[in-house]
Image (cartoon, rainbow, N blue to C red; front, top):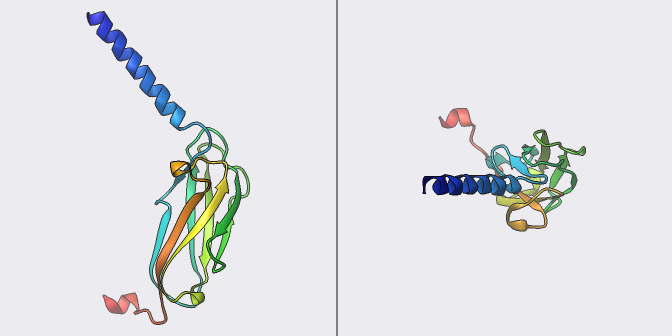
Length: 142
């Protein structure tokens, strides 16, 4: 009986390792700090910049074919070379804040060969915040 229990334990342990390994097959994004960036309250006028850094936690290179913002108010740049497993890449955004009025929530779409959450066709990043004409100086507000 003890041998049978040990055999079943080994079988289930091996099966669990196989399932976990299959989950990481292929290219896969892991964004440092998540896939949403909140600028908070920002002054309208100057461009607001943020770079999403990612690590390829998959088993094959990530190839980013295109990065498209949901509106023309956002400029984009990204890693143009394949990002090998274990290596880092980036998606940089610059929001034209002079075109923003109040609360904003924008999406940026990544077309790549990487796996996406819930099997979506493209990976989605979000930037949000509140653009105002007058922003109190943080030093004075303290």
